[in-house]
Every structure is written in C-alpha cells, then in structure tokens.
Length: 296
Image (cartoon, rainbow, N blue to C red; front, side, top):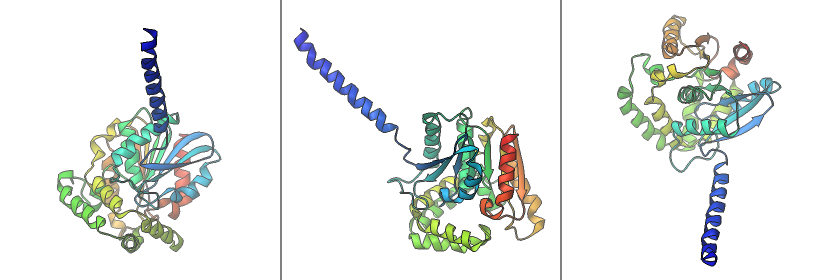
C-alpha cells in the first residue's frame, strides 16, 4: 500500500510547488501600471493624468520625498509606458492599486491624482474606503462630462453616443496626430513652453487606442453617487487660469463644488492664475496646499 501511495504524494508535492510558483508570479507589479518609489516616511501615491506619466510630479516629488515615501505611478499606454494587449480599463487600475497597497502593506496612503488621476483617486477611495488615507484631487473630478457640457445635470446616458464617437476617433489616430492634437489644446494646459514640450512629447509616445478607451470610460462613469463612501478628508484643487472671463468663476466653482457635496469631509480651493497642470504653473501654491492639508 505504501508503494502505491508514493506517486500520489509526489503528485501532491508537484502541484503544491507549481501553485507556490504561481503565487510568487502573482506578486509581480500590476499589469496596468508601473511604480517608481522615492523617499521614506508616510506613503503617498501620485497618479498622473491622461497621456502623462510620473514626470509631471518630479518637481513636487523633490519637495516631498525628504519627509514622505512617494509611489509615482505610470499607467500602461501613456507616455511611453507599454500598452496592454486589451484596452486599459480604469476599473482594472483601481483594483490593482488596491492590491498594490495591500501587497506593499501601505498604511492608508495619501492619494494625490491629477485630472484623470484624480478620478482614479476618487474611485479608489470610494471603492476601498478603509485602504486609503486623505485624497487630494488636482483639477480632476468624480465625473468628467459636466466640464465639457458646463451642466451638472449631465448624465451618462446622454454621453454614451459621444463617448463611442470619441473612442473611434482616437483609435484611428497615429501617435504623431495624437501629439499634434495635444499641442493644439496647449493653451488651457500649461503656461511655459518647456512644459508644453513635455506634454506634447508624452502625448506623442502614448497609445491612441488606450487614450480613446479611457476617454470613453471617463465620459460614461459617474462617481458622484459613490463618493459619499469616502471616509477620509478630501481636498479638491481647481485651476481657473484658462477661463476666458472672470465672470465665469462662480459657475465653474459651483460645478466643482456640486461634485463633492456628498463627501463627508471635503473642501474646494481654486487657483485662478493656474492652468490645468497646477504642479507646473503654480508649484509653490500647490505644495503649500498639499503640505498644509496633510498636516491638518
């Protein structure tokens, strides 16, 4: 009987070893993003916006890393980071960020996101409220569409046709056309030519299909009904420097405020001189806002 049981024992051992190897493989970095870690201290996760990577945070990172451990995220398909075989989904990024926090044993890390990255910060904090610490949204919202419609009553159903059209439009682009498109919209993005050059370069090394898929997802995902689940304080920072008229400020401020009204601990502040990339246009103001909020 013992001779007959040896093959079974060997088989069980082999299966166990294969499972162990599989589990080790699963511990590799997430498929949807790469992370660069700098500094020591309380953990901060920094998520860039559409067609951007961790370079947008370098100036801020230099100021923060003496006191904090920074986890600088670069998403697949943006700014030269290799794209996934299937279109990137922000829901996948969110779940993999949660897994990353758990794997690295980060204790309620502060999450800072710019634009699309701010959307991801809202999604992460509302989907996994016990995992995350304070949230800082740098000119990014729980729902993108009202920014374009200038109407807080805009719904996902209304945006579906436009989202499909936008996705198809970007899928047909070349990388050079993507860079050209980004350059045409630079007036609302940044003030300085050197920063405009970085934005254009990042766009030109992004994957058009990924960009189109993510824009469509942003236009058809409304987190305003979810953000009330966020348990930690939230700071939303708006950039109003590209507005054509000062008379538009009250309406823009009201639109931003509407998106965070259900969050138990949330506040809004605007910089009326800065364009969309606040980290470049008003770096000192941004750093002061972040450090003050973290220490509160």
